[in-house]
Length: 429
Length: 126
Image (tube, rainbow over all chains, first blue to last red; front, side, top):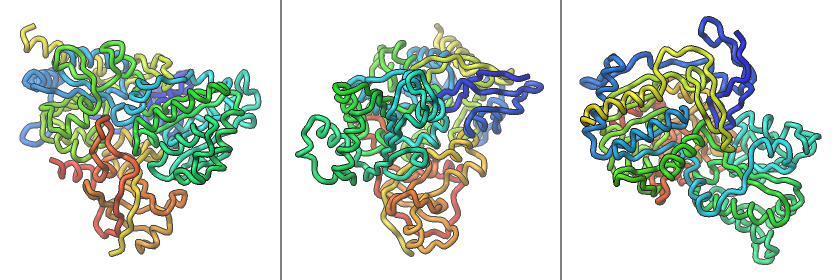
């Protein structure tokens, strides 16, 4: 059976043109997706059964016992941390936030180690942005800043930016200029017209210099800023002003480096000021396919996009205090529930050390480093392959994930619902 | 043994992304337990064809395989995001929730030790 228009549940570009061949409830071929998407949809080793750790060994158990053990850990915990969410549906997010509220827990999302600083910046200065459809149809200057999208979002250029022909960009690639700003010559540079190499940690002063030149104050800009000559900076500003519709896509090169959210504030401010001359927009290159979805759901449920602490009885938001890495670094949480993510692989060693010491529950389709530390492991169905639901593309457009094969496991939403019921039962509610 | 000072950067590679949800595999180790360096830096370390390096920062150390990438300027080391990179990154979030994943000072030296597996890395934090 051929299934068309399947969404790829891998990165924030959320390609919706994937073709999947299914035989006997097994995916036998995936077409149109990038290598990462094909790899995910074709499948990997799975966690086959729920497990509970006894005397240091994970022992197979039933969903019922694993859910009951999870509820026991959470009910006996004073400060649980509930974390993850970027590789599952918005329906699961909603259930997770309900559980966090019930427990008075802290709920955080992988955004806090990804584009969390971008969200802080957007809360400071707003975000002049648009949909990827607008960019496809109108943009003639595309700037990737600190974003190696050829490796992280391989079809971004072909679907939304450099290559497609749009209503007002009939010439396709020929009519567009592509500029890459990065600290190293990434693979994205190979398909760009221009590469501007910035010294590591120097994005902030380079952005400030561009703003100064744009404001007509080029006299105060030194001859070289962050490894970039003044002449090149002036040329880039002219290019930006001359564009009919320009866009900056920025990646973790801005959020992971010195300056963090301040770099993004500076980039957004530059774009705001460019709008006095021409149409210009800016967009974060969101990583996981539904990290944006969690921030949307969390905002409409709690008023805040991530790092929400319910211990006061109402939502409290203060990244740096209520974000997962900080809570782990302070050795503050006394249990953790991880859903659809792998902090043991992606958090700093210091944070992982505390994760290893506390009761840890993992809900995920795949064995991973977090499983090596977990006390309870609950396998889930793969959202977007075995479960349908809603996901938000990086431009905040919600799209419906499709189910292409029948699952052998429960969905994240179902597992969280069962945990919530069990928690309420144990608390006599 | 020769050592060089570098600015360390972590980030995504397609190969690492392909095996992102297959982390317990050998393929993931081969994709993520690497350190990309300019050939000048690799030569300075005395590595001819291939070899391992010990990457050390104020926050930890880890052994990974050296790999030549001349698109990296000399003095910049790149390790794909993942459990090996996270042994050496700065956990301080500067009050905003985000550790310092890119641009920290580190030292890279030739190593004859083997690359730790994920199971070994996780045993070590217990």
